[in-house]
Length: 85
Image (cartoon, rainbow, N blue to C red; front, side, top):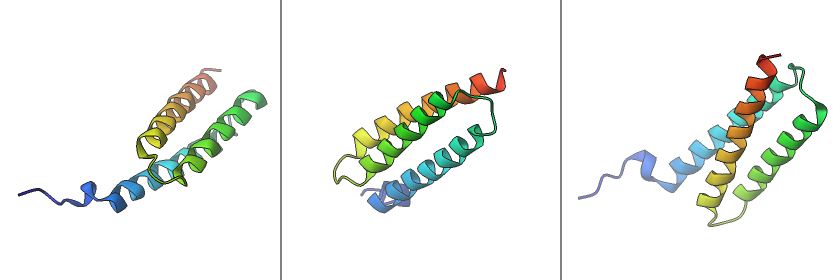
């Protein structure tokens, strides 16, 4: 017998992804308050838009997750560099 927990459903995975994307947008918006170069902010915005566009394509879950993880790593780096100024 398999466990049909909510986390295993496609809708739960989409909900989780949606929450992560919303959180990423919130974190990106907070970077505007830091003294980061405009080019870096623009690059991060474009990268997140690309992740959001990838979500729209059917059957690209793993690729979308990879892109999101790459973006989150870049975002974390930007947050760290902004706080260290």
